[in-house]
Length: 243
Ligand SMILES: [Zn+2]
Image 1 (cartoon, rainbow, N blue to C red):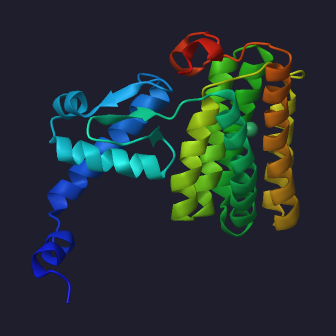
Image 2 (image 1 turned 90 degrees about the horizontal axis):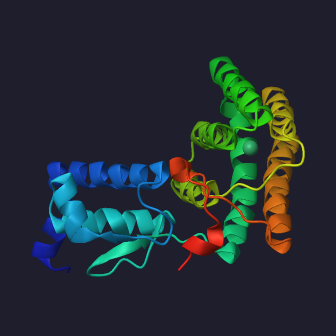
């Protein structure tokens, strides 16, 4: 029989502590998304505990959860670091997203509501205007919102946990798009396939869309064109910020 005291402590984790861990996890996730903590940057447990008004143990647990979702790396006694966006890792993340976005699109066919479809079209139209005005950062934010929303609608908790981490890795860069109208066109075709319930086509279009993003980034890397951080509105070459 398992040790009674450890069993009790696992089963009877106070709801308050669980809530604190979720709150801390979301706060750190938001800091990463906002660009307050950049890829490769250390997340110091003591500092985070003080800043968020919780114990180091709660911060450590939240960091371990974030590690499982691909947001941070190397949780140890001192802390962790935001998953670095070196070129190889970026390409890996895009490859994973091809699979996950395909799955999300397939699942959306059975689940999406008319209201959700309308909202996605609105997000996409606004994104389109930003890209056509050369506003990459604003357009990029709406692109991620679009993809995250599809993942949420897909209704698979494990998928949304993992996919948001990979989306976070690929969010930090943008490569110039040859035709700024293209991303919105891809999204519209995808939404049409989802609306018609054609799951095979929806999956294929979602995968092709992420694949073309990956190709843009690969081309930029091969040509030595700097990729840019989107977070925080700073245009810095990716090479200067990797570890
Ligand atoms: Zn997109």
